[in-house]
Each structure stands twice: as C-alpha cells, then as structure tokens.
Length: 422
Image (cartoon, rainbow, N blue to C red; front, side, top):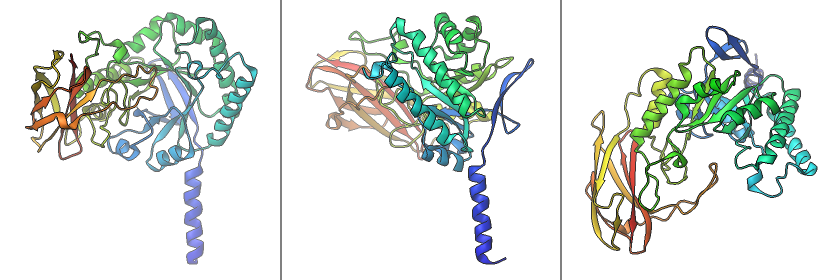
C-alpha cells in the first residue's frame, strides 16, 4: 500500500469514528429501575453541568456534560475527550424580553425554526446522549401563561422527536411542587425525562417526585450548595451567609448519593453545578473551580461519588473563619484581623490570599449574568497566611472578606463573611 493510500485509509477511519451516530434509549427494569443504553450497552451517567474543563472531567472519572445551548465546538471537544453530552436547546424566557411572547405566532414560528435547525444540525453527532430542551422556561411566568408555555414545549418536543427519534428529550425545571408536576404531566406528555434544578432540597428530589405522582425518569440537572434564596441565616442588613467550600462539598456528596442509590432507581443522572467558576451573589457561591483554575472540594466530593475514592491529592479545607468584623457593622477605615482554620490532608505547602469585595448589588434571577463586584487590594494591610490584617473601606455599604487557600496541586478552598461599613 502506498503512503498516500495508507494516509487516506487512516483519515477515512478517523472521520468514520468521529461521525458514527449513536442511539440512546431508556430502559426500565422492575427491580433496578430506569437506565440509559447507548448502542445497546448500559450507560451510567457521571455528569456535570457546564461546557468547560472536559479533559479534567475525564481525568476525575466523569463521562457526561449537560449544557444550556449547543454548538459543534462543544460536541467535538466532548467527543475528543471521550464524553457524552446532554445537549441544551435554549428555549426563550418570557422574562428576558417583551418580544418573547408565546401568544405571538411570529415569535412561535421563529423559535420552532431555530429548534428544528439545531436538531437537524447535531442529531447525528456521536457525542450526543440526549436533548436538553429548555431550562426553567416556567420561571416567573404569569399564572395564566403556564398552560400555553407547557403546550408549546410539548409541540417543540414532538417536532424534535419527529426529526430525531434516537435521542430522548429532557426538560429542566426550576424546582417543583405538586402543581408544576401535574402541569407537566397534563400539558407536556412528550417530556421523556424531567430535569430538576435543585439545590438545598436536592437530596429529597426523588422522594418528592414519587409523592407528587411523577413515574417517569428524572435527572437532577443542577445541584450543589444551598441557593442564596434558600439560606435562612442572614446578617442584620440582609446579607446571606455563604458556606465554606468544605461544607458545600458535603452537600454535593449527600445529594449525589441520595439520587444514585435509590431502589429502584428513577434517577438517570445528576449534574453538579457548576463545572467552572461563576459570579452569582458572590464570586465563589456556585463554581466548582476558582476563576484562576484551581479546583474546589466539590470536585473531590463528586469524584468520590463516581469512583468510590478520593483523588490521590485532596484539596485544602477551611473549617472556620473568625474576625472582629464578621457579621458586624464597623467604622470606616477601622483596622481588623481575621483568621482561618485550615486542614490539608497531605500537608502540602499552602498559599493564602485575602480579598475585600463589595457586596453584589445585582439581584439576578435564574443564573442571569452578573458583573463581578469591585475589590480593594490596598485594604489588605498584612497577609500573614492563615491570618490577615485589613482596613475597612471608607465608603459606607456592604462588603465581604474572602479567604482563599491553594496548595501546589491545583487544589483550593474558600470561605467568606459579610460586614458592613456604617
């Protein structure tokens, strides 16, 4: 065989592998419950919510990502990393724009064309596991519009099924109650899998769904820390108290095991949020990574859930933070100290970083974009590692002091507290 023929054969083989379509089905067994099969083989989802850090996900034992929108770049990168994708198809929210009017035939037709185009374009990609049709489309919808929204979701799902019958359809909701479950069952029967975005109540999702009569499979499509909207403990001026990265990791693991150890199992997969960093209420509330790249303990916890063991080198843990300014109103330009209690399982060398930041003034809904608040590096007077000396800002208002600890293996821990300059 000539070199050219050999090269052509290898190229065609690679292209064939890259473009070989896979087929996903949902199977039910009375003793073990629901499970996926991909091309006839059982497929257990070990997933995350996010479209970044694919190679790291594979390294830690994951195999699936859930996205809110989709493109060829995401699918190709996932496939190259050996991952499957629950591919998001974004369905517009009424609250985002007056033009997203579900009583307007022109808007309805435009959105249907967009959905059809997405499915036709990506339905044969080998990385595709399932469709994620819409995310929290019911959030802050007027009561008299809910039936219309769910019926349109059903029409969209029928259209997706008519184009691609080889991949099931999941739709994610923003929590639920008995009425929401009844509405989905009544107006949206084409929904194959109910996705639930759940935070504080994530460990009880399966139990509550059965109580409310949902007998199809489900996924926990977002979970992790308690949401700011769920936190009861607040400062005197209304700032919500954020848990440490260590406490959050405990919540991730409890929710994961609650979902995946059901008997029989109705949960097809759980997707911790968020497999990157994100500003939402604070710069550390939801991300499983710092913006600079190091992973937080949530990653180690989920890896334990997938593999039955922690990574060889675990991240640091902050167990407490104490300060005269913690949850207090302080004078402008006053001087304070703060101290953290830190554990590192391997006694790695640690780096400490302290940041004073304004409280976010943006009250976003449903994960909408927030700008990162202003920080004040000059107010950190003396960084002594696990202890810091700092000055309160001169401007009246709400602030937070963040503590960051990083080891030399790309592991990190975070904790913060709010204070108020009077």
